[in-house]
Image (tube, rainbow, N blue to C red; front, side, top):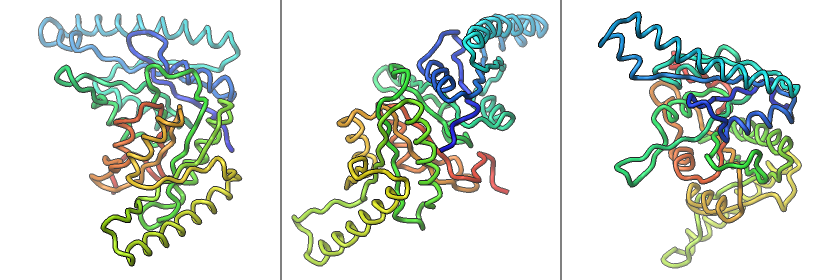
Length: 308
């Protein structure tokens, strides 16, 4: 499978090496990929100076803010270059960080984007993914790896969640892209790779008619056969195939927790028009609740732009 040739790492504007940047560096090193360090920055206090004080003062303060981070980033990039890594870097002033990242993706066409999965507190009790991160998640046209704050440098166990059974609801091409994205990650990390599929029904003898039980059992057999056929196409042995039954989000989250999956690779079906902003309930549920890293894969043809 094709290894990534260009990795785009999103760098924290607070100027520290995060779990995501460490992951991107190690992947670039092992894959022989070029690494581009991109730091979107914005400071509302500086932005407000233009209206409150003087536009020229705002421009000077903004440039100082950018230059300070660019010096730090350039020094780090030079250090990585001394380790035989091909690197480049940039600092982008952008009120909407996701727009700056998407523009960079369209300009550079990286094979992978790596970013920290950041959460913000809500009413001091709950935490949720930042709005800007959701925008990037929904619009990024290339594989996007979201890295948890306490993640290891590389995953030890990778799971690719596929659903090759219902092409009407989801094209099989997306499952091919999921596996083709998961395999290079597992190879680079020397990690175990498994395929996971969830049959969306669970047999429940209590209160179920014999006829309905028979239908569910027939569908389950067909589902299992289709999954096994898909796995054989990628030479995935039986012991690396996980077939679950029930609610997909619940079952996948429980499997991740129980089996120690470090990286879950999932797909999101493309939708046109306004619905392009929607990932689907399963993908959003997994991204919101998974305690492992995630690699989100979109189908071919997805650009993140409105349908014409």
